[in-house]
Image 1 (cartoon, rainbow, N blue to C red):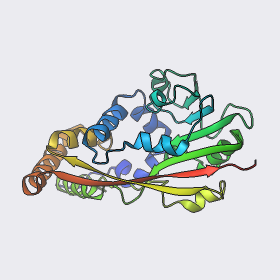
Image 2 (image 1 turned 90 degrees about the horizontal axis):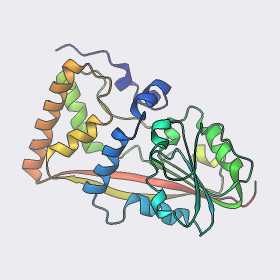
Image 3 (image 1 turned 120 degrees about the vertical axis):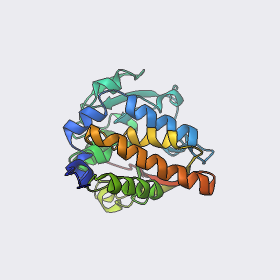
Image 4 (image 1 turned 90 degrees about the vertical axis):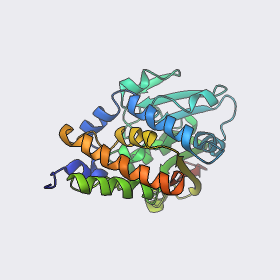
Length: 270
C-alpha cells in the first residue's frame, strides 16, 4: 500500500497552532472531554494532575485568578473561594464554563496591567503562534507578588503509545506516523526564562494503565485521526487495536508512562 501524503501528521508540531485545526479540534469540548475522562479513569498516580497543579498555584481565598486557555473549566470546581476569570479562543469551550469568561487570544489579553494574583496557562502554550508574546502578556497582567503556573507535557511522554500508533500508521499507509513533536514542553526552560527568569520547574510522573483496547482507540480517535482519509481510518484503528490487544495479552495491560510538569514563577516585580 502506497503511503498517503498527510502533512498534518508529518508536521504535527505546526498543526498544534494552526487556526483551522484548532477550530475543528476545539469547536466544543467533546474531543477534549474524551481525553480528560481517559486521564481520570486510567491514570496510576493517586494524585490527579489537576489537584497537583492547583497545589502549585496555591491560590488564596479571594485571589483574582486568570485561567488562560481554560477549555471547559476543569480546574474551576476547586477554585470556588477565588475570583476566577477564564479566557479561551473557542466559544464552544467557554459555553461550558461556569465562571466569568472572555473569548480572547493569549497573545493579546484583554486586561489591564497587574490585574491578577494568580495566572495559570495549562496545556495551552503549544497552541499559541507566538509563545513568547503570550508569556509576556501573562507577566503583564500578573501583579507584583503574583504566582504564575504554566503546565505542559514532556517530549518523552507516552512513547509506548506513539510507537504503536506509528506502527499502525506505517502498516496502513499513513505517511509520517502519529508521533507528536510538541512545540512547547517542559524541556523548553530557556523560552520560559526569557520572560520569567525566576521560574522553576516541577515535574509530575504518571502512567496510563489500559486493561482493554477500547479506551486506547477512543483516546487516539479524539486527537490524531481527524484528517486521515476516512477510507483509511478503519484500517488504521483495526491495526492499532490488534497491536494494543497483543500487548495486553502479553503483559496484562498496556502501560504508557506520562511525564508532564509546571513552570512556577513568583513575580517579585513587573
